[in-house]
Image 1 (tube, rainbow, N blue to C red):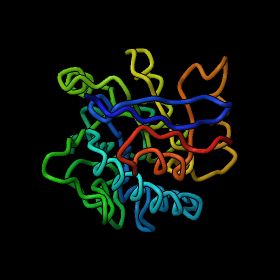
Image 2 (cartoon, rainbow, N blue to C red):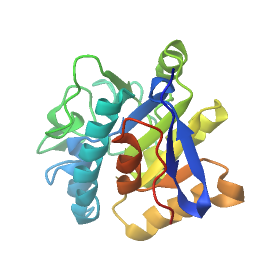
Image 3 (tube, one colour):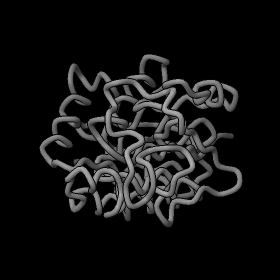
Length: 227
């Protein structure tokens, strides 16, 4: 019998899921976004607002592994010949301390320390913001019977929301863990949360790391405390 878990979310919503049908999508925990020598820092972004996300995502990842969720790691990355880069992404391929920005195989495009995938975990390299864009993610999820997605990583307003929009269009039930997602500007992060809650939480539910951990680190059906 499937183990049913329940997480309390913003707006008095509950997100119910079973580990067998749920994937944790860890979005773009890459050096180019999070390392002081990466692309974002080189472009003047202040990483202090995304640094706290790192430890939260680690905790969520460990709990999801323990609970038996499918684990998906994603990396934004482009071909060395720039054949899959559109004109809007003018900085992709520029040279920096960690190699060419967001080019597959470069040091900066890889995961930060502590986020190395385990042997049975999926890595999706995506030439865009959404994890579904020009990837086989949907096919992989369908094959494994995944219906629910728990989403963490960076950045909230860009790759996180782009992925959630794409997931909802495909019929996946989404949960964003708000303090396990981050943006360089706190106001932008908050705006993304506001969009998520529009029209009766049209795009999914929002919880926090503590509540997610409370629901997953049990051996029976659990309801975490309400907001």
